[in-house]
Length: 297
Ligand SMILES: [Zn+2]
Image (spheres, rainbow, N blue to C red):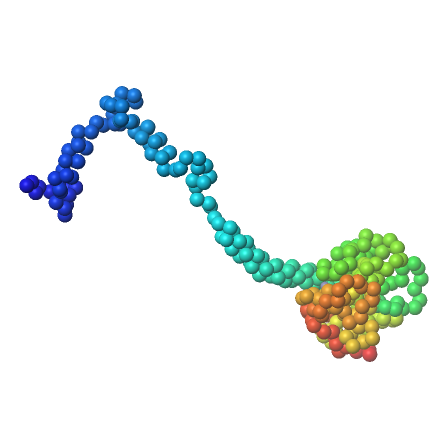
């Protein structure tokens, strides 16, 4: 017996049958080298014919090409993906809403800061603050002097036009009006719809002689704050006319303590932007009377 091991039979002793099969393989003609149609016998096929025959024989007759491919994903996998997207959306939407609210709060604070700076410039020119409500006696003309008119030259607008830019809080339901003379009918949001802020009711309400020299604590005295837009004059919490509007941080136009002509669902009390006489801004949950108090009270 020939026990010589070839490189293909390491660890194995070839059987006589295996050796015979290997001899037959060596005698088989090289199919690849035979031109198509010139093979030795009727049962011998070219490599191209063999490939076509083998692939087709793997599938039953009548099976479509779609049936031969496995599906990309199942219905269960699709439902799981949809559920995951839904969960992610439910997590992201409140975050986006809070981010949007913070953006509007920042723009509102910028409005109030500009109004406070305009007030400081006005006071520097006139040695008194703008007039609140009611206006002081002794004025004539169609438009009585009041803070939102008196400040407009310092804000780059015409003196008889309000309701633009800095007069409207971005979180307010009010829309800026092109001209206050559009009509006398009250618009939703109050006060003809062109104000979302009001001035401290103790600053030149019915008078015109209060300036910075009359104020005891400039950095602790409130000047303007968010309101529902009904009044041009701002009243502290606890007052029968209290009108600080806590529309930021989850509140809305109706989160003020008194609802006056404002439609819609009453939201929980949020926070209100307020600006002080030294032009610093705070986002507050309350507006007590001590923030309104002047030296001349
Ligand atoms: Zn605001």
